[in-house]
Image 1 (cartoon, rainbow, N blue to C red):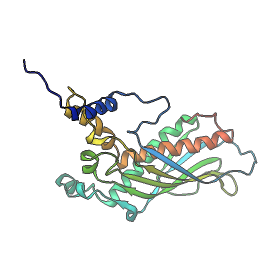
Image 2 (cartoon, rainbow, N blue to C red):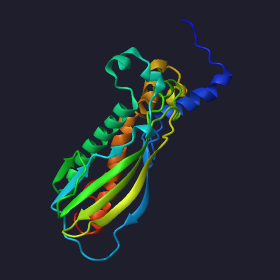
Image 3 (cartoon, helix red, strand yellow):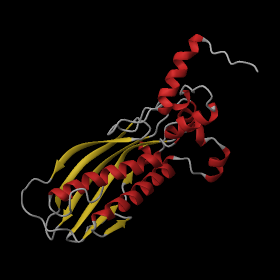
Image 4 (cartoon, one colour):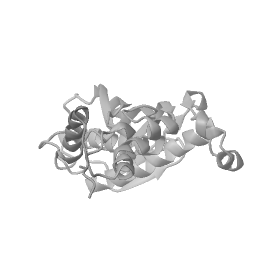
Length: 247
């Protein structure tokens, strides 16, 4: 039987590969494969006056300017997308709006307060909490880089500005205003060292999962989750819901 010879210079790489593939995350440590959303608070309610609990939460579709949308040029020229016409600034922006609205409605329903999605702008009915906003930036990134390179290369980007107002019988009351921005989640990408005896193709596939999901749809959903948490925290501070109700 032929014996496998391992060259000395390969040992450090093999050891690193085993560590990266097998080592579990420490308790409380963020998953390096997951997207993160940074919140920048701008204003929040601080008048001190008790506000009545809203009877309904209204989630308005966010606005998006096609000029603020970057399309993945490497995918735009593919025949399938050319035929379907789904890789243009207007369509990419509309998809981002759809993903964010659906996820935001889903998450806010956990507050126990009825939630309604509103597709057009208008004056909210009294005793409702209106969530409105706009996409300041939507970038598809480059799928080719996400799959082939990894390490955060080619990641998409989603930035929004959010406004949550309580609609009273009189003037609307600002509850929370903030900005969100996705951050590049570093991971090992396709360049993860492979442990001895492991299937290189399988290891590469596992390593690039995170990068493949760093697209506009995934980031819009992550953004919606962050928005829901920020709004629900403010609702809890006002005594409308219990702490952590929307988590």
